[in-house]
Length: 453
Image (tube, rainbow, N blue to C red):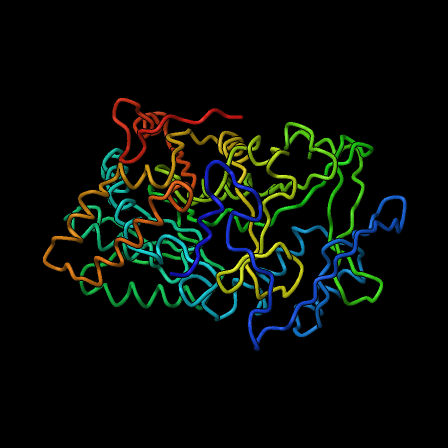
């Protein structure tokens, strides 16, 4: 079984090296060999910039994206990590998420719950049906999926709605949001092939909003983020870790930039508590914009975020998080080398749930539940689905083996089962109160709301 990104969501948060199989070694004959330089000196290049020699990776300039990024740095000077990450992941024709190569699944670099098994899609189908009913069964109900890929989650949802005989299937529209045109085409083909069986219609990204449900499964962790470092002598105790070039003009290296007072204050307020000296921490400032966009996708309904994440205090606990949470993934392996092979590696960090909840409140979303993926599955019909798969007319030995393996991952609190699930309601006050009714919770949403810390 390929490794997943699941250990990143484990609780309690483990040390950086133990979160996942970390091996920065050579990935085979087709990968360039990396030579890790272990320098320890700090070199001041200007009063405002520090060049960090530790943990730099020397690599050959073997692809176009390498050259483009280095050209930008040479022209503009050191860039933020969020800018580097944006280009590494979404550069037209070259970025990690836009090329034809399959990234998720057994043949890719990581595996997510929908590729592992249909269980998550089945659970979300039952939740979607309940949401639709609480909205008085509108004639149109849209499934909006960010990072939809080739459609594994949406197809599992459709299959479960059919098995349940849910009338929602007749109102359902699918709106996939994905930067990868190759995966989007695969999704369109898969749904189209099912339409003879009454599959829902596909709608484009520009469709007018309607009632529905928004799902972001392992999506927010890959939104570009900045990296900061605790510095007692800096404004508000924080500096920014940026991406620059070493003296050879080819090797990318970490450089440290002093922030002006207003910038530093913004970062310090985002973190809420000072970082320890030398401590690294990530900050994603795009949750607000993303959630604002979400409110333009549906008029009323539910927003579901599933991802590895923790509250801000836990993420920045210096006793266990001195090095932050950012990792790069390639070939089902993780590495702390974030700067090599842009376009060939996934770049991620834990989701700051405190920042997410704060952003949700700012756009008028009402918290419904804050739970785990294991609890969501258990409360949304998992036992019935497992029984069907084991004893139903379509049960097979191969299916039983796959189910057992999937359950070991999805229900493990130190694996995918420990992923955070954040549910928010959108719509009129009456609709929001129906969604968040503690006396009649949504399937899988019975866990109490976590404190906003």
